[in-house]
Image (cartoon, rainbow, N blue to C red; front, side, top):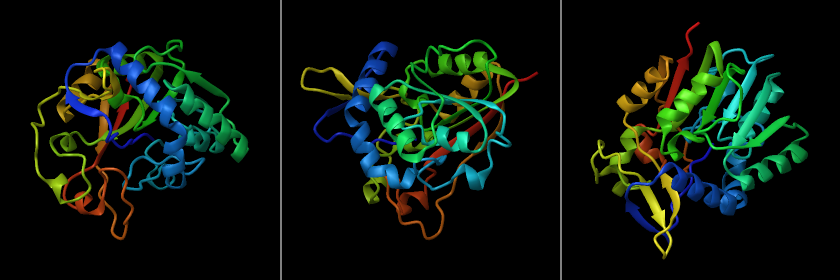
Length: 273
């Protein structure tokens, strides 16, 4: 799962960012920050676990994927491949990819450390999947890939292409409503600062004006239309509530905000027969 914190040294702007610029910026950002991200969040993520969101919902408890044993599974934006490793431990046949070589290096180190290896790790862009048609029974993404690509509708079409009939796509992202609020876990993060309908990308720039990190906003309606437009059927939308007694803050996620505003959206979709 990827839920990075903003770089205070970077200039934050809202401007257009092409698919190529977004992919380059995010690849380099994660290459540079993969080790630090794991050092900060690895204990919460677990080395072989599928954590859907900062609210603490884990697949072992939620059962959103159904039976995975013997299924061909693709993880989109795998990061350190913690989710892929959990899927391997459950008997799935797993392929995982990420845009960042740094993240994949972390994944291979965790393979060695845990003794649970992901058999197929691939460096790829979520907008152009290097896999054959109808190759997978299940596609999974926990905060990986979808919010970081400019052409997320294209990503949905690619996922539909590589899914077998009756295959399922389950992915989590920051809840679109959060786009209207500042990325602040405290009281300042409860005041609307921009329009929910403003889809201009969030861009962090270096001193030369080059994008070094990019996220793309879509409304809930946009996500539904992307899935339907790709020929998928939306079966469920899960908005995890902040659990009582959970004090863990993670970037903009906190007990204060979680009690009032949804932080995560998990989409469950199916490819028709």
